Image 1 (cartoon, one colour):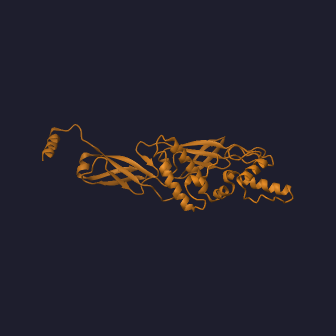
Image 2 (cartoon, rainbow, N blue to C red):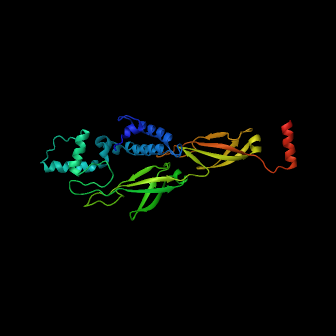
Image 3 (cartoon, one colour):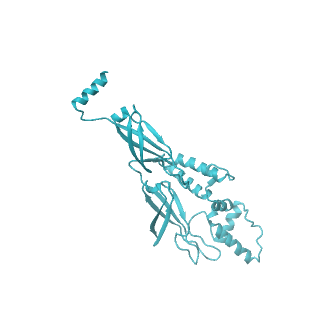
Length: 297
């Protein structure tokens, strides 16, 4: 089924790269699995948004998509077939300037390649060459792994593949490695490798889009009188000043201390710290007496 990437992101076909980026970030925050736990429809929508953004945020891929529509992945095969057809016709190829109606375009692909190109399985060309099957893999990361750009090596189809994982990848996000799928047939190109990231939850941090939420325990005396508390964030240790009279559940916002924004170096979400006031237990007689005095004062 053809998916209109522009419609998915809610932008026009003339949208600027900045408009596409803003639209993606807004919708990704809305439909992110962390914000919609257990919501399969939101998860499906989030994957569609990632796919649309991967295409439209890349100028080369966007140009192919604008020209070939749902068959954009096979634009190079089409161009080669078009050249071969021109040669076989003595240079003539009237009626196929590149601006097809949808029906003409699909029929042309079917006649030249023996089938539609809407799927990702291997397809043939006029020369008998077939593209290899696409491969799929999952890569497990913990939340701290996803905060820093790093390289990781793993095996796929007997090959050692080293990839650079950008900081800020999302749980469920998919990337494509061209040519790392199954080998082609009769000298055809290899298929592609699609990697889906699975980011495990963290007991200390909750990620919501590019923001991070966490709870920090403080004792009753610090909550009442104020004081300093050290907080271990994803980006290192910070010192917070607790205001006197801080209530249980009170939240402070630390700008720029959240998750790195995907492929936007130097841009981070925010960290929201909620105080969890711990009441004292096993009071001594003297301490209980003091509390009674406070109660009756």
